[in-house]
Image 1: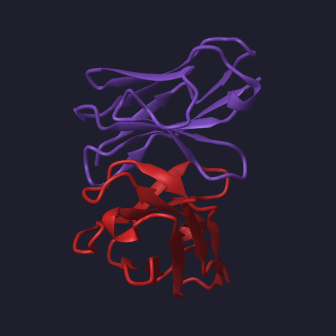
Image 2: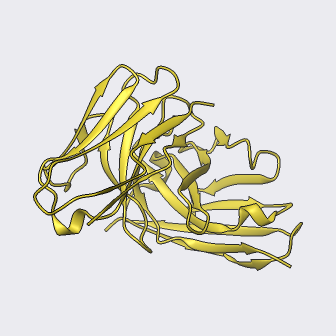
Length: 106
Length: 121
């Protein structure tokens, strides 16, 4: 199975901060990497698909990038509603795997 | 409006069975792959299973292969997950999710609200 390693597992930030979350794949996955946001008690929400494509309706402060097997989710200016847990997910294999999550808190 | 509504969760004893359903509306159900993702209490997301739009192709996580069966009824716009030989470690919130594409599954762009499965004696 393809392993996805996210870092950090948690981070503290303030409103207006630039936040970066990294996800590393255990093998090449091309650009088959998606990012989700989940708030407590809620279902996940797709933010970014295919490494860098913004899902419809998602604010432009979210962006994704890729360098080999390393993928990055960036929030350019953290807003109060962005405090949540973020997960990466690979779909290079039909057997999906998620990263362990990154909790973004104040 | 695109909506997914799960049902069928509950309390079941170890070794028991349960069938989850997911009623879809607001989109052409048969043209999209669908899947199930679960989340154990206090844990992260774990993909469980996916199925192509036609239902011809199915995919399972190793942890559920041979115990769970995913299926769909495109005439009823409904996705199912038959779960047998349930274990305590299957306890989780189970989410139904719509994929962006017909096949293979790629990204889950719509999610249901989740249904809770508790496996305990």
